[in-house]
Image 1 (cartoon, rainbow, N blue to C red):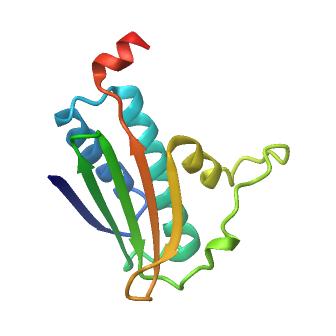
Image 2 (cartoon, helix red, strand yellow):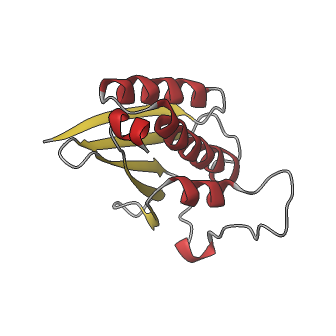
Length: 146
């Protein structure tokens, strides 16, 4: 059975904290270690910041949608982050060269580092963007043993 968590919120940076709290509570129920939860929260936070900053240009009237799909059998989670902004060509979304360090612009690199799979695509309805991220979670007992 696939379990679902759906979070929808205005494109307000402060609401990322609320999203993170919901994710933390959800993963606590699944016995996921704090370190693994942190990785997922960080990637999702970076992704939402990118939507708010680059797609919505801080327009708080816009909506961010996050769907979390949990597969207990293989402890795999799929995160679908969707916006209704101007569709972006996935080929234009690139990680920054780490030799070109600045105080910003590492979001895509962080997202790809924290997740097992990352796919940028247009939404099914053709209006907006979808970021699909997949992550396999070890059990908390696996974290203690390495």
